[in-house]
Image (cartoon, rainbow, N blue to C red; front, side, top):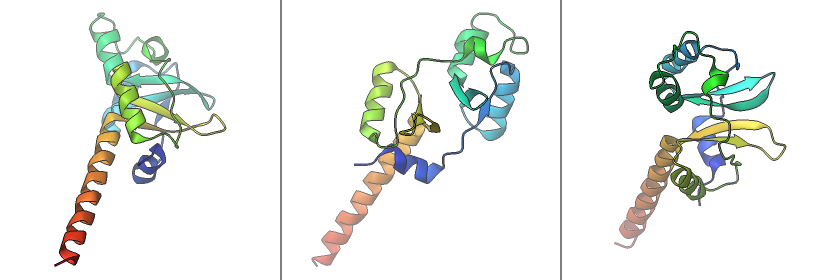
Length: 145
């Protein structure tokens, strides 16, 4: 059974973060430049929350706010469930489905932020696992011929 640690191994544990006083527009530019859908909100190395494209669309655009005047701290999601590297891909998928979320912050045993997993990461890992299984089954079938 694949774990969050396997995902972080494949994608890396690089964390893109902004400070809470960063404007939403600045955060969106960073997200666009890196082709990512979220940024962690950190203050002096302490995790505060996450700002996602969904936060932007629902808490800025739909409310008629300005992305140049609104600070990330005003719209970030703060109460996302946390997962650990030892949690399974299946557990994360169920958690995301139950909570209707697309991102999960990953914390190590010491409580330090060690990465983030997205629904896309989980789907990619699931596909990779299925492809490995198919390859092994093909090898098994061909070895018996």
